Image (tube, rainbow, N blue to C red; front, side, top):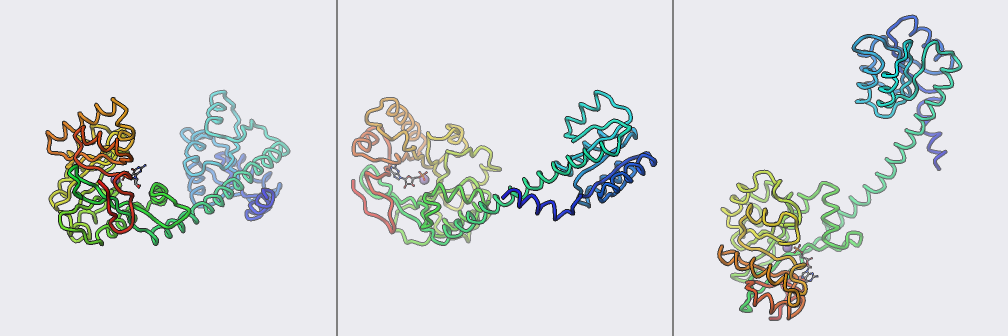
Length: 387
Ligand code: G
Ligand code: MN
């Protein structure tokens, strides 16, 4: 397999290879060029580092041979500049005056060989054969990487397209402590088996740089079902959605029902880095949207995001809710959170409530709203719930 790719790669570039020779002393340039051509290589000869760099920008070479002693543009300076254009072409340095310093610098910048004059024809040929092998290996490596990348990229793109095409939203009720329905959270779902959870779909969107497209699709779906009077719709935002002008447009599907919508911003990723976060949230609030912090207590942003957003609603992460009835530390945390929020007029949702015990404990600790399997599982249409 690798042998087949290797011979392809070499054949594409001719049997012996193409060399850029740069030497600033005419006799030296002539002698080296003659030796290289006699050995069967195609040679492009330049007499200064500057003209050689121009040649590097436009042509493809297998090996560079440099013999430069011009102050300001000697072998090392050329090597350093050239590496900005090409990381892996082998470079053979030829010098009349070897120094430990320049030998070390040559190594640092990835020179292939450091030859001291006089260089015999045999020595030069042996070094070039080795350099050409290294070049061949680098090309094989590059080609193999490309094959692997193509292989991964194409199916992911196709799978993500299918996930978008089959996207639907599940709804999960959020219930008030008095048992009345407060709202539904719209949750991302798709029928694409290779992206089996919302996390997979989001990761794919992120990898393909298609988060904006996904966000728009979710928001336009979320705006479709008709809610009963007074029932709120909770929609998850990815921090990237806050960079999308469409979110703020008064004509966007969700904006038209903004007074009924709570936008959830997750605390799992840092929102402190979002550009102009405060004015952006102010614009959304002007349209009538309410803002919730999602997964509160699960992220690393902690109280920073709380202070930045000053949310209308806080959703306590299910990791804090789990077994809250038997873990006093969780009880104390949630109780103080609920107390602070009550003082500030912020509603507190307990998320991921799985048992009656958890639910009753959260009620006793002062949470306002409840969501989780114990009340209703997410489902198509608007599922009924138990309280
Ligand atoms: O990050 P966010 O809170 O938006 O995600 C909610 C996710 O948790 C949804 O995918 C939903 O299906 C899931 N979920 C909802 N209720 C429960 C629950 O009671 N227990 C668990 N484990 N997951 C839940
Ligand atoms: Mn959520």
